Length: 126
Image (cartoon, rainbow, N blue to C red; front, side):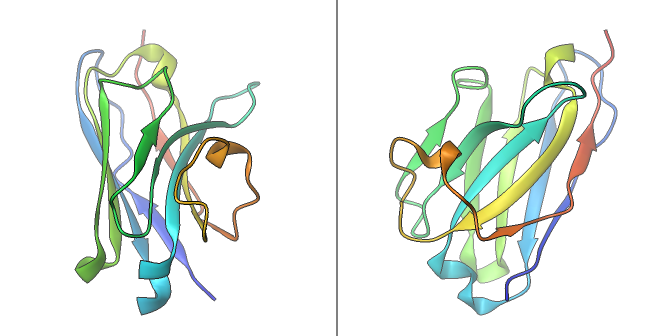
């Protein structure tokens, strides 16, 4: 069993930055790819970034490419999502999730992830 806990969500002004963290509970963490997803009220969940278990592969949705950066520190059992240039359309609950074996290849956002965190709220007022 792997538990994931997100943190770092906050209210930030347009153009501002936040760093989200996704902390895992187990050393088996290092075998999992991690995806970041977000869901805004009334909208479908969107996969925004993925990092493979080794950290060697990453991917981003077009909506965040060039503004967000994903990274992982396996020694700390943590994945980070650095978010710059935040805009009102980035307002959502952000979730991290764990998957095995796909290595963030095309289609990673549509896979059935094994474990999910509880989410952290990011609000960017208009």
